[in-house]
Figure 1 (cartoon, rainbow, N blue to C red):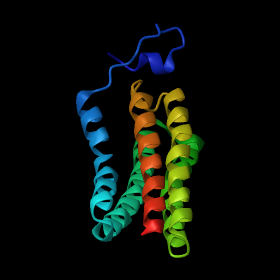
Figure 2 (figure 1 turned 180 degrees about the vertical axis):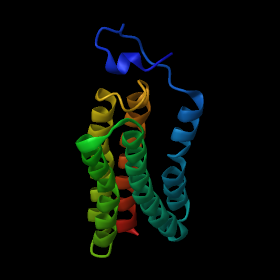
Figure 3 (figure 1 turned 60 degrees about the vertical axis):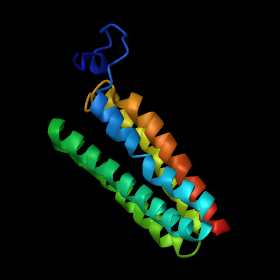
Length: 163
């Protein structure tokens, strides 16, 4: 199956097939915060460290999203449009850095910034899809992963605050 449906409005509306490897690896990416929350439930002392790592992981993934956007744009765009997309692509790293700075004052606020960045990333993913820069199945993977990791990041932040 090609990505024609993502760019051609006359293409038949069919549900794009999500590659199994992308689904497997993508959903495996939710394991670190899930494991951290599980550890916290059984051992809050060790779980506090695990939750801190889960928050770091959320920041890393947010930066990773920017890297994906950079690659998608660099492969398909030129000129002023490339400048626009590359500028957008560096924003997740800056948001993750800002969240990291806020963690020193308030873990919950830092987690909220990370979660907001993860949730907002869906707007960029959707724009990339509409512009034809990512595969037609992209949003079938990105929505549950961004919502899932954003939610788990918020939970981790709230639990660290209780620790």
